[in-house]
Image (tube, rainbow, N blue to C red; front, side, top):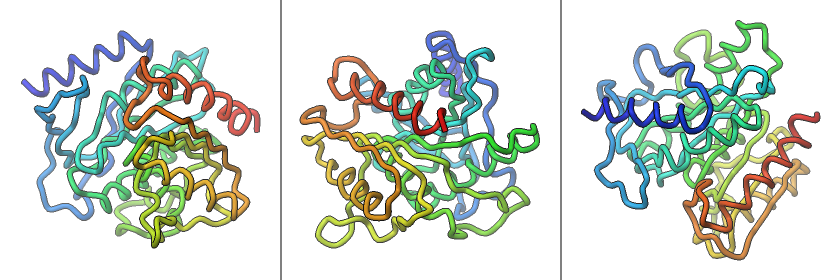
Length: 284
């Protein structure tokens, strides 16, 4: 029954966002590093509050592919990382629901189902592997210069920031030839990111190794968000290292609004991000 509901939900998004799901790509063909549990279909949470579909457990990490119509394809890929406090994945609010906007702009979107619950370390493995898997496929297609970025919300913003600053680390044992490919994103968008200020006195978390090789970033948050300081400390670190960064901080909007209408922040950030993507990614 759960699998049937998932298929119905995915079909709904195909019909409503004018995109095409090409494939579900599982990231780890054999053993999943750092995991004892047997792979199984993602488990949905019974909690549907706020009209949000939540994945409560992921043991077989995957990327779900949403492609724009061919004439509109700009050749740039973006991995979407939903939030959920590393406890669940808000898979529609901050995942599938974002793809229509990206496809309309011409981007191919990959919604990442990374491991939950309480798999913060392993979630980084999954995002790094996703970047490598996508690059391996585009390289085989003769598109080795394709730009690839990450877009994360809340905990997904934390995950995207970690992938953008820890790409030189061998965080998991090499499993095949794909793992020799770089996991550095070409750019990152952090939308109301969380957990970036877990250093001393609410400074940048020491695990975030910002330097001159860190990719350019777009950061959006609000002053009334309890996690709003994360955006500030990340932007400061990027500025200090002369990494291109664009920061927007609205007075109100809260947290966890995705791209749904009815919230001033949700209605503001997409156009700002579109402008940034055009001038910083597509025009360069």
